[in-house]
Length: 248
Image (cartoon, rainbow, N blue to C red):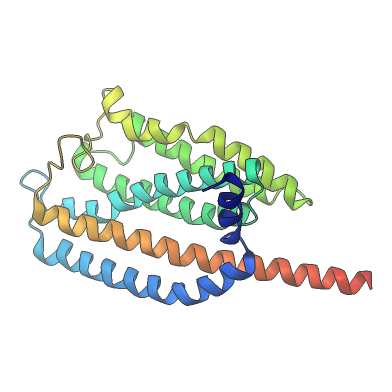
């Protein structure tokens, strides 16, 4: 496909009006699929999956902690990619996605830190340690908060969006640090047991609800970010209409 046609195809999906129509149709489906996946995952996690032979019943925190940690990194990676698209190609929906996704990513990060503390107390005997994995996730939360702050720090929305995009790209280096921190440094946090080159080392009875919860969290994020993006687009249209009336 010629480069010109590829560019036109990409921007065809970047049209805000087309996005509004598409999101209106898709949100109910993603929301329903999210509820089904999370509901099934929680049932399997609490009533079917066995307790861990070492950690006992406290291992059930894993079914919320691990997917929320995955989503914290996944959302930030998406924001970084959107920020690159906004800076390089001036993609009309990229900044809107980044602005809409950042509070959701921060929420997942807070949930990961909170459930990690609840899980760490019986395992490590303390709520918090300055472990490489924990510290890098805390840095991720600060990056999210910084991104949100910069988005709203300037009267000129374009300036705020560009500043936040630069921060997102610089902070993207933290994502692989989080992922590989347990391999690069001697940490208290257990190493990866699901995403491994040799394959998952977790029992299928625990892996199934864990993956269902991860799927449910992902679908929930997609549904909610589309709702937030629709709200941002409609709010921008209202502001533009009011300015046009004042100008008239």
